[in-house]
Image 1: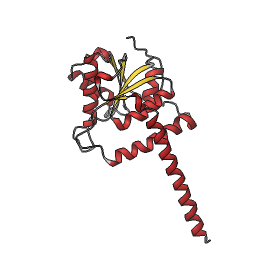
Image 2: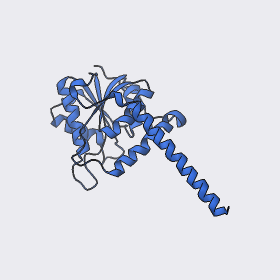
Image 3: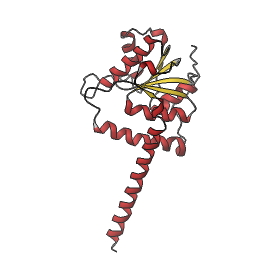
Image 4: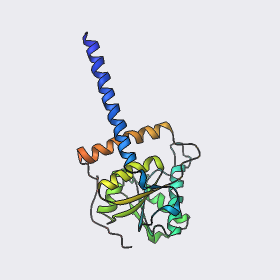
Amino acid sequence: MSLLGKVWRVGFYSLAFVSVLLILGNLWVVSSTEASIFSDYSELPSNPVGLVLGTSSRLSNGMPNALFDHRMQSAADLYKLGKISHIIVSGDNRTRFYNEPMEMKRALVKLGVPDSVITLDYAGLRTLDSVIRSKEIFGQNHITIITQPFHSYRALFISHYFNIDAVALVAQEPGQQPSTKVYLREYLARAKAILDLYVLKTSPRHLGDKEPIAI
């Protein structure tokens, strides 16, 4: 066999191996968490704190982001129904021009949630960071995660790894389903989460002083 043929064969089997690992990893993440995902408010267990995972309020073209709007509406609904009594809004605040937690707080207040029950987590740079910080910084072992369905599996997988008793209320997805790019990114992110937790032992980029939430 020529050198080119050997390289092609190694490349093919390597790609096949990685593809199998990705598929198995995604199956593990989804199958181990799907029982903790709820779309019906009446069936959702109550928890003291809801954790809203951050996303931009605007799309790259400047239009409103429906993912953001639906997460805020779901969080506000849960609070008004008494399913949660406090809300952590966790997101990215790397520059003064981009502040997900503050945008989330403004949206929730407009929806009738008192600002006194909203805690801002400015260091939720990744889902991993947001989940760990809910326990290590804010002292919560029982949380309700609020995000879209495609994102909820990974968030719960991370929560359960750190022995956080978490469930997820899945916010409505936009009328048009998220793009293939969004699903592909999440597909890869689930595999990355397994690496972060079981191989790399990745820690949040920022921890800092504890700020326990008294409920």
